[in-house]
Amino acid sequence: MNATTARRSVETARTLLFVPGSRPDRFGKAVAAGADEVILDLEDAVSGPDKPAARQWVRGWLHGTGAAAVRINAGPEQADDLAALAGVPGLTAVVVAKAEDPDVLQMVGDRLGVPVLALIESARGVARAREVAAAPAVARLAIGTVDLALDLDAEEAWEPLLSARAELVVASRLAGLPGPVDGVSAGLDDEREVFTATERARALGFTGKLCVHPRQIPPAHRALRPSADRVAWATQVLGATDPGSSAGRVGAEMVDLPVRLRAERILAAHRAALGGADGD
Image (cartoon, rainbow, N blue to C red; front, side, top):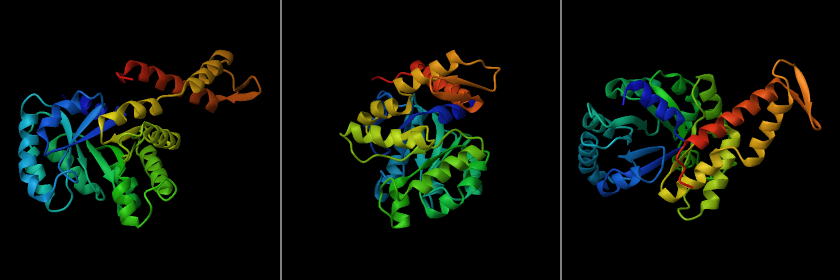
């Protein structure tokens, strides 16, 4: 995969599925689960004593027929992660945990030659989100809600983290990046929880979801594509108004250029979703 294709893959991924780097038996199964991107995790999913072996398993799989992104550690462990991943042909992107420093992110991207997904998980990361998003190596932002709530001593709930989520959306827009990726949902068997959380994040401007189990992929995909009601509304708007006019009317609703542009965006997202393999 060339650099342009790899960056595009990160930019457009709706679902990104974590799999522990210490479980090589799950790597292939994760790829087959239907997520847009698989992330082999060398950070929180792997205990300290298991990290050296996990690096070798990840490196070996990516040197073979495997292709995936990898989440690397922050701090002292990062150097060993970078050494293990340097020159690995199957590496498609690198997810940098606890991203805070744009210079570090650029160094990681330059060294590994792949796009960076910056995972914002701290107050400092949120405060520097606009600088982080502006780093050329960064293809997208994501929010790590579990660690961020811990750092803020806040509840891991929607309201306490709303301002942080909104800041990532604004930072992404200012940097010309796609909408950020929302954090994980803890419920492995509750599809409604995943759907509701993803739908709420999508309304705020997020365009992707981190997943920790294959069962979370279908509800996340459903939440990220426009609803039938929104598609019907957009179709009606574009069918009943003149593209060259400044304003018009659809039923009781006034339609001007921003409304037309929103309708066009909804239908574009609908067409893109139809072209994807959702598996649901």
